[in-house]
Length: 298
Image (cartoon, rainbow, N blue to C red):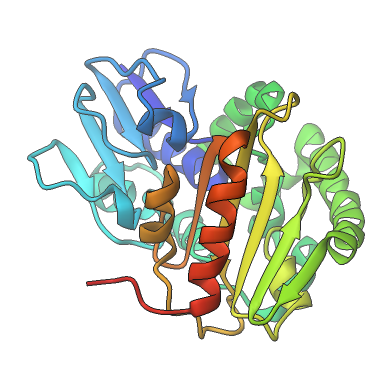
């Protein structure tokens, strides 16, 4: 039996909970949702999928994304919850020996971006938020760390996890990285009316950093768009879209919109990934829908 999940903090917490509730015999398989959608992931009978789109070959499935809803019967649980970890926690709640309620509650806040202005500007002051930023989903070289973090989440409290030497080193690196990221945002972001657009494609390497910071720096906009290359060769483009968590006047269902562009997500946040040759077609269409700010829900 194997856990298949995405490499973000919600995915890591899902994995920690599933390890405690099920008899897992293999390492976590970390995959991107877009690769699942395109059939690029080998899903097998016995796999437990969490925080990912459904695949009929899996034995259990847990998710919370708006665009992942299915009508066919399945084993597991789906709910439009703040996090996928929340869905897993409810399903197995009677089986846990430890109290994971605080961990799940904090994961809910982070994954749904239910944050204060202080949390967005100063994540280093908030333990769970800072810890979540040590996971970068597009850094496959960090897979060993992702697995280690899952093991730590199973057994330790957050303060004890932050005292771990490797975690502490990564947290310090994140704090410095966030400082640099603020400068990158200022240089590569422009406001198009009520839409905030960050385009990192001119850079040789896409900077990582506090994904909530843009909402605090551009509070007059209602939605942000981040564009970057998703591979070193510049053959894939990734676009992330999110409602401003401090200016909640965006009417577009982001997940539904991005489903038209090989992606998906929640009502308020989502992403898509596509061949770079489609960028001149897809990106203007995405921006046009956001600028019109019309509801796209039936």
